[in-house]
Length: 320
Image 1 (cartoon, rainbow, N blue to C red):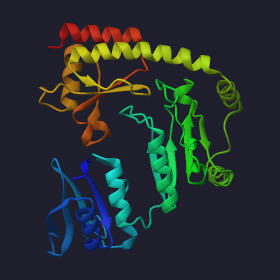
Image 2 (cartoon, rainbow, N blue to C red):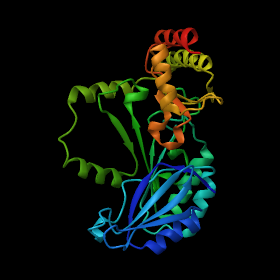
Image 3 (cartoon, helix red, strand yellow):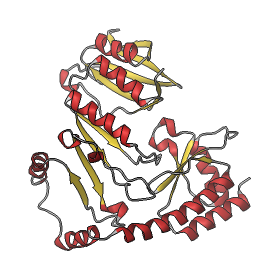
Image 4 (cartoon, rainbow, N blue to C red):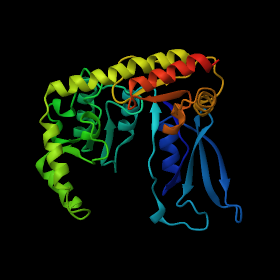
C-alpha cells in the first residue's frame, strides 16, 4: 500500500460508487463495512480501512443523516503520509485531477525539518504545469539551520505555476510582528492584494520600516543567527541522547524531530507526560501533528541553550 497512514477524517460525497472506486481502486484502501441510518435502514456511511486502525468515513451527501444536500459536499482537508511521494503522485495523476486547483507544499518542512532538493522542486513545478495546478510553496524556515537554501523559483518556468511564501518571523526573529513575503507573477499578486484590501487597511508604518531594515541585513546576520541555533541544537541532541531517542542530523528550521526509544511501548503523549512528571521538562508530542507522529516528539530551539542544557541535565538525573 502506498499510503502509510491517515488521521481520522469524514468526507461528504456526491457519488459514493465513484468515491469508493477512487480510494480503493487507486489509493489501495479497503472497504471495511457500511452503516445504515438507524431510523430507516437507508445507506448512510461507508467505512474505508486505511491501515493501523485508521479509517475514512464517506457520508452519502451530508454528515447529518436527516439532511441530504449537495451543498454539504466537501471536506476541510485531507492529509496523508506516504511511503513514496513520486509513486502516489503517479497514481493520482493516472486517475485524473479534475477539480484540483491548488497544491500546498512546505520545505523545509515543519515539524520534520526535512529539506528539499532541486529535483523535487523540478518535479513539483512540472506537475503543476502539466495539470494547470497552482503550486503554493511555504518557505519560512529557509534561512534557519539550512545550509542548502532553495527557492522553488530556482526551477525554470516556476513563475508560471507557483507562488512562494516566506516570513520574517523565523529568519529575522520578528515573531509576532506579522510580516511576511509573497512572491510570484504581478497579476497574481494583484489578485491577492485586491482580496486583502477587503480585509484590512495595511500594516502599521513603523513595522514596515523595521521590516525593510531587516530585509537589508547581509549574510553576516544569518551566520550569527545560526550560530545561536546550532548551539541550541547541540544541547537538544544531548537531551535526546539522554532520553534514548533517535534523530536525523541535518534537519532545518526551529525544531528537532525525534523518534521515541524502540523499547518504549507507549505513544508520544504518554512519553511526554512521563518526562514532564519525572523531570519537569515538556516535550511536544508528535501526535498533535497527526497520527503518524505518535512515535515522535518535537523539541523547540526557540529557548536559550542554557535552558536546554538544564533540561538535559534534569533528564540525565531523573529519567530512568
